[in-house]
Image (cartoon, rainbow, N blue to C red):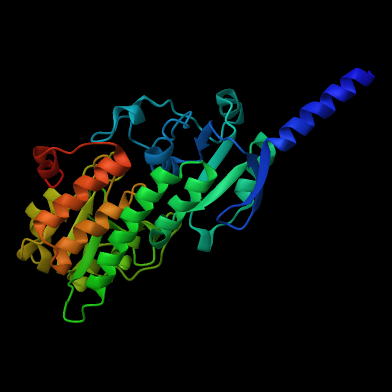
Length: 331
């Protein structure tokens, strides 16, 4: 009996020596292994955030509803198995050392993460998903995952995008048009200003005409009369959970023809491969959206935009975009 107690104490002491206590980006104290080699992302947002710097440590990914295969990303992403973080037995079977959860720190309720940590006995580390903090998030991940070189490279890329964007936004001579963002096939579901799904539009200081309450989930249903009253000068269209994009119906249906954006042929599909440039899910893929809007609204050249986007795909999706693939993003 005495021998068993001694062995247990030695194991506990060994685990103690191989662990450290950190403060995550939500301000929580979390004890994590010193050497982290097996991680599981909390959701699809986190999967995408981690892939570029921790693909070799990811035991699984989380899927976006309606999606099973992603284009224009390294094959290793599609080959990762799926895990349902809500299924504790499934999670435990993967045997991760750590769960990483990306969330909006300013609004985060940490209760669900505490509950998950308590149920699974696996430490949960929260990182910041805010669009203006993604550089800091990668630097944090560099320290956490002992991946400083890879994370610093991506943090510096994002910082440069922020810098160029701030230069655009500080130009008082630039006048930006009013915009309407629609998701799904009807053209009548939108994300108002202040929603996490339109953070790119807000970040670029564009006038989102949808001045309606933000429902749970961020998506609001509107009617044609409201759109007529708003009369946006530009419309962005995105798919939603496998639903078709509204671009074709908006540009061909007579009920839309008197909207300013339609009359002036200012209706755009939001690129969506492998992930939407505005959201779906709202994570690091939105950096591509910032770059694109810099071209559409702030005079960034087509050549510079293509160069930045191509570099983005290389850094964050481990994918070398061909010229034809780049062009196909906007079709």
